[in-house]
Image (tube, rainbow, N blue to C red; front, side, top):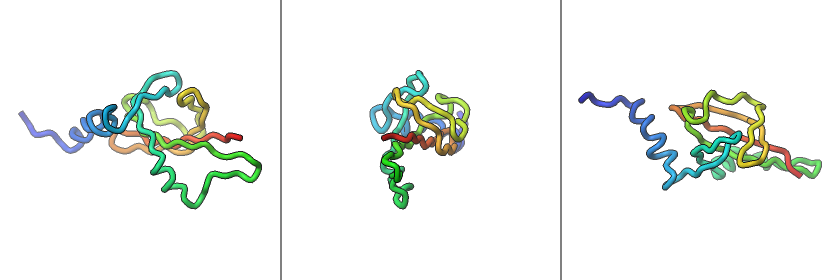
Length: 111
């Protein structure tokens, strides 16, 4: 049996480590479909330290940074696309793809 390459090992780690429901991930609904997702509030806070997400008109931005397997989600969502995340509408503020995972920053203006 041949040795597995690094990419094969990373791909296997997506479901067994990063998106393991007993460790980091939970099931969330994205556009009506249940998916295994990690919601990372701490990383989002680090990214936004200088911008507190507060608007001057009495509204604020509700934001979520989620990680989901590209294989489960599908094609990378476009900037500005509306996504229903757990019954609430958000728009895609940013999306990066790395090693089979999508890191999607969602935001919505709330009052």
